[in-house]
Length: 353
Image (cartoon, rainbow, N blue to C red; front, side, top):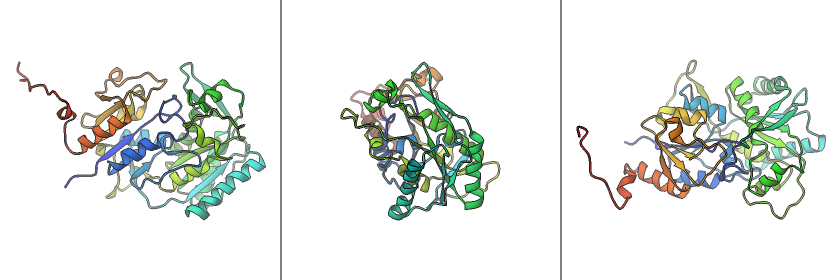
């Protein structure tokens, strides 16, 4: 009997990926790969589309820090039927905008049947600041990380939360060039790096799933907005996709103190990893690139990172597009060498020659 065919799809956050660097625009890629995988492991940057989302029953929604720990073999993933999700709201969110977030959360309970705890407002405004590196990649800081952690801890200890959704007030910069380019599908997501800082902090501290949705003032209408960025134009909140993802996000199995169960997923079970061809410098991909796992590097998905697999000692199969990557995965799952599908095949060589 064959074991499940497991694929990891990574599109790093905040590096301007041509596909997956915008508002959930890598979700079609995830849907396609999920169709030919028994298990797809990916992260919120791929699956979050603001108020748009798609149920992929065989996909595991894993936050970036948790994905790094999983890739290194420190943590395993335990699929769940449902998580009870706790909601943290930044005290810096204006009352009307805060109410929009609460109504969005209530809507997911009534319409989608999600299980949420009562929410907590941080005791201080979190104070999010956005930064950009010379390469164009984005990151950020928060002034009050302890306030965030206190709120998350209350939800876990007092309300029984099994996953944490965070909504932080992000600065409005309606006139910035970065935002204008992003809305036109040409730049780097100015929020993504700071969002990763927030979720990493919670996951690292409490070892449970977490994802973030920014609170922002509605943007003025712009007829030139790119379809890749348009999901974030739909309303006052990006929270629904986060709550949907967290509702089924796997729990982390910390190998040093947990009993392993049948059905847990570990890094040594990964069959293939799909990554943009210039984005191979991250912790997860460096850990995943073990000899028996196929690394598929997609050239069309250009980024600002400029780290090809060969530069960090990773042996990868390069393809031009995600369509070609799907074909490679089909062949790999079937036990067919991709070279067998080429019109010419070189003869075997003797190792002693």
